[in-house]
Length: 117
Image 1: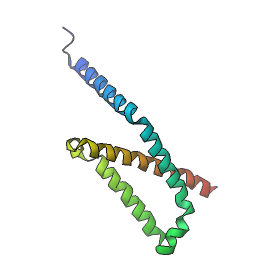
Image 2 (image 1 turned 60 degrees about the vertical axis):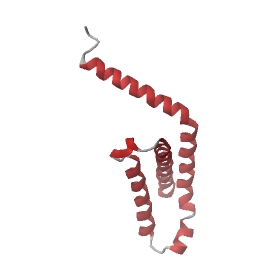
Image 3 (image 1 turned 90 degrees about the vertical axis):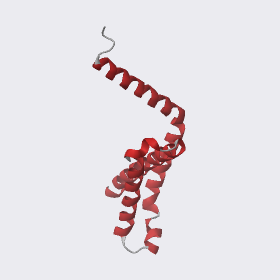
Image 4 (image 1 turned 180 degrees about the vertical axis):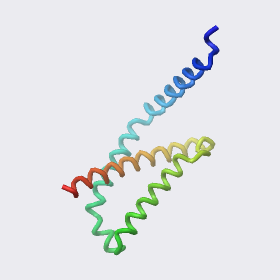
């Protein structure tokens, strides 16, 4: 009698969704952590190599605008609505790219504390 309620259907939907996501994360956990740390290292090294970039591009605003544009493009590719209809390999690539982006932003964030103090 109670197995067909909307609430239980919703609970089962969330449970299966969480189980499927946890299986996917377990399968690719090492790659996710590696890309997160790689992005973190690249974010920290950006401040070190900023003078090298300044040799080719004189204006710092262009460098920062280019980084923001790349990050927003990765966000667009990752969270687009037609994302579900793509092939599995492309979905994995964008998820991996998203973890690299998160590590890069974390590296920028921690490097800004080093510069500010």
